[in-house]
Length: 358
Image 1 (cartoon, rainbow, N blue to C red):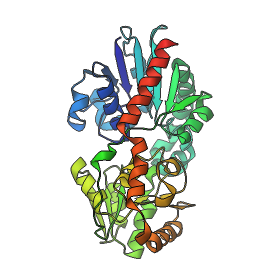
Image 2 (spheres, rainbow, N blue to C red):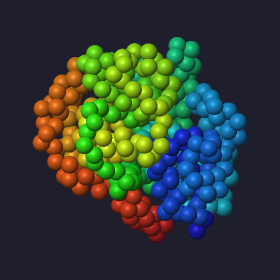
Image 3 (cartoon, one colour):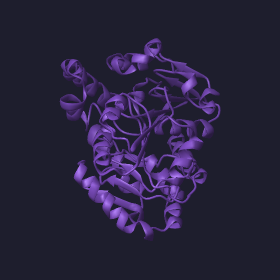
Image 4 (cartoon, rainbow, N blue to C red):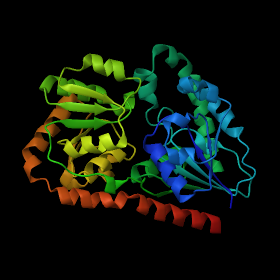
């Protein structure tokens, strides 16, 4: 069989790219199609495959501003020679066009947040004023296209029960839950060094804003790993007890997890790979009690709170501090093994085989 992997864009290594990397290892002969591609920003595993970028690639520095052109670029890919297409989707990647005989599986990290469940937040709060003027007509067109393009998919895989519900809500399609792969055996526990850790791209929906305000007020140490458009704003509001680490290597991130007291997860996660990485390091998670974190963190390591507010987060930190001495590291690490790459590979292989045989 000739197999193609369609991924929204390859401009950094985040959770979606880690899933694509695992698919590359599972399907070593597959070709990759993507809207934007920067080879220097992805792993050698991904670079070892033949990668075809869309005609939009010269504008990759401004990729978010090209959203309205992405459907056209995806539909321009020539996938006639492929028997199986697997799209990796939290953007519009599933919109590629295939032959009638080609099987199409979509591994969905989430339906596009800025079109669906977080659309009011982006439109009314997070988007700059100049973007809001264009957002309503463009989003309406893209939402119609996104719903229609879901019919091009033969089978959906959701990265969590949380996303399975979103897929049904947005597309009225059933899906099979296959948790994303996490290299759980690479993480370790060390004695805590007195700091809390937050990890993620610095974008509005991650909600690092109120976490930074909370820790600035309480004075507790916080290390924030990641980069993105919110970096300067967050840095301005932070006090000296908050350290901005930027992007770090995998080995440095593993060390940061190993020595932290707990992971802070202030936004609603689709699944929560960072939460699994923390749990695999034997560290508890202080998280907004919504979305994927409810699945990726065991009860004995979870300190959930109800609203994305400073007071709620501060209360959860206090509950964690009261229970910190009694947390059982081995139980957390045992829970994380269900999210290993081996489990992901087995589940995806079963799904691919069932779709091929159907």
